[in-house]
Every structure is written in structure tokens, then in C-alpha cells.
Amino acid sequence: MSLTAPYDQNNIFAKIIRGETPAIKIFEDDVAIAFMDIFPQSDGHCLVIPKKTGATNFLAADPADLGPLVARVQRVANGVVKGLSPDGVRIMQFNGAPAGQTVFHLHFHIIPIFEGAPLKQHAGKKADIAQLENLAARIRAALAVN
Ligand code: 5GP
Image (tube, rainbow, N blue to C red):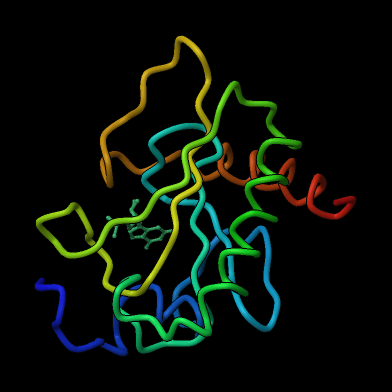
């Protein structure tokens, strides 16, 4: 999908926002939802998305929406670090299919890095749901006291 393709209201993240597709949520407010990536690259890999639909990617977003959204990304990343104690954390996002984007609703990846544990493939193998729930519970608990 090109950088300028129109927004599809039936993309998987729009369905998660509307509650039509389940997600293991770790954070939600009026601006953003964060949930566990179902095909994680590392333990604790999660995504932060704006609740507002319409922006396929970072470049297409209203600049006024980015400050509040990035503040949520930072808040969730701090919760991930506090809850899971990784050695590092990658925060990234892709724009356009040639850049690696596979879901065309603006989102940020939060990918904890554990020394000695290689990252898994991007959008690769489906996680064990019980393990995702366990990681999510630890992140939620950390966010609750942040
Ligand atoms: P992108 O490739 O667009 O940067 O990232 C999309 C991310 O969404 C990928 O990391 C992929 O694993 C994740 N993903 C795709 N479909 C689903 C889904 O149905 N549920 C969840 N929780 N994550 C998904």
C-alpha cells in the first residue's frame, strides 16, 4: 500500500477500536489504546494506536494529534520497562508497505529488548495467548502505579 492510499475503516486496528476484534489491552483513554502485538518480536511487544481513525501512517496524521499520542507512547513504554525490566526498548513505526508497514492505521511499536534474546520476525508467528495475558498483566500493574 502506498503512502497516500486512502484509509480503510475496516482495517484490523479500526475493528479493535470499535470492539469488533478482540485485543489484549494494556492501556486505554480518550486518545489511544495500547495492546499486545499478537505476532510479537519479543516478550512484551505491544502497540499504541490513536483512537481517532483516518490516518494510515505518521505522515498522514494531523500534527495536533501527534503530541498527545506520543505522550501515551512514552507512558506505555515506561510501563513496559517497569513491568518487564528489559535491557532496552525499541520504539518504532513504519510508513508504507515498502517500509514494512502491514496494518494501515497509524501505530507505534514498543519492543522490549532482552540481552541475548534475538528478535523474532516482524508480523511472524502467533504468540501463546496465555503468555501474552501474563505479560499484559505485568504491564497493566506497572501502568497502574505510574
Ligand atoms: P506494521 O507491520 O504495520 O508496522 O505493524 C502491524 C503489527 O500489528 C505487526 O507487528 C503485527 O504483528 C500486528 N498485528 C497484525 N494483526 C494483528 C491483530 O489482529 N491483533 C494484534 N494484536 N496485532 C496484530
